[in-house]
Image 1 (cartoon, rainbow, N blue to C red):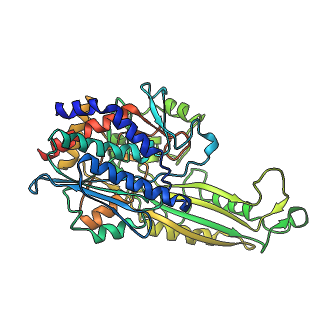
Image 2 (cartoon, rainbow, N blue to C red):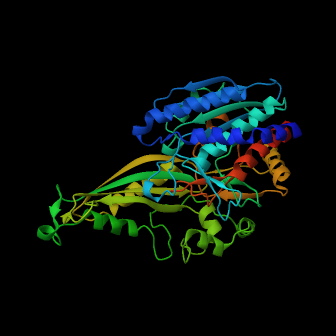
Image 3 (cartoon, rainbow, N blue to C red):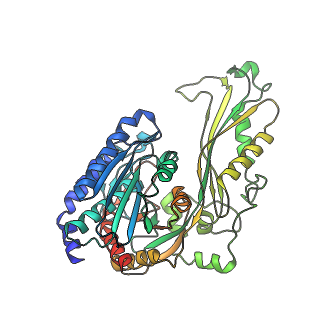
Length: 459
């Protein structure tokens, strides 16, 4: 293992520059204007896998963006680890809020990252974390220290719903056979407090359209006499939460798995500084469902969030218009045992039901995924725990993640495999926001920790 670390130290600057090259590719999967860039990024990932010593590397075309596959079989009798990650990224908008260009990586020191952080779209989610696996395997292969077989499946549609991953997995069950799936697309509590996510929320993502008159109207001539779709949409969305911030959709909580007092107490033992949390976000107070702590609200309770709302005239200057249409994008995070299909249906029925006369409502489901809970007593989890303890000097804390990785449930259903969520980012790394960043420490900590996982899992 010392030889592996020596290799990492010797190639530190190259590992950093190669990540920078990957971050410069604007692989925005949700916008077809970037389709060629997404394809170029897939080719780059494949090239890096080949250079790392991985065999049978293939850029697999799908109905959407490509999936990169590769494998290294060191011993058919050895255990096999299937590494999942994604090379696509969120849109960089709003561009003007970035301190440095979104696709030109820059290292800057921050209070949380005194050794410097890499600022770029995708730095943490998920190029930096995914690339740690590529570099860790390279270091193990270069030093003859890879004790497991490894397979890579790196997709390009995670940020837009992974719509083609299910068919790829179903059509490649034999090729994807493994003993465990390893994912680094989550976070730790702090750089001095490692943790492992043992649960993720599911997701229902929809777009709504509210239509009033058959054309935009003069707000002086028609205002006060015709329902304004923006006003109606705002009222409808506001009604989704009651005075206790409880979601009012009928049946929404019917299947929610409720933790008992002992489980909630255990969850809240995770280190959490509320004042530091508020200071980091620049807010005077937290908000959420009454009767639950911030850790519970973001880990074990379902949510309803408005992700975008628009309609009418938003350009420079003024235009006194009563718009014909208003739109919103909405995400609902789900907990065990909720179903994304059920929640999408319940929302659609509810939103249509509460629409007043004078407008019509259209709900368009985009994508979803199921919540998962992963075991904390498996060989793989224990190997991850020992690996993190080896490099951080303290045993990691099991936590519940607030985000969603829908493919975890897919892997369990299609491949019969459990997943270990061994992330290295921080929640404060501005994922999906301007100035996304990833600590240089975190990047290399991932590269150093992953080989220990293979060692302990093989043992």
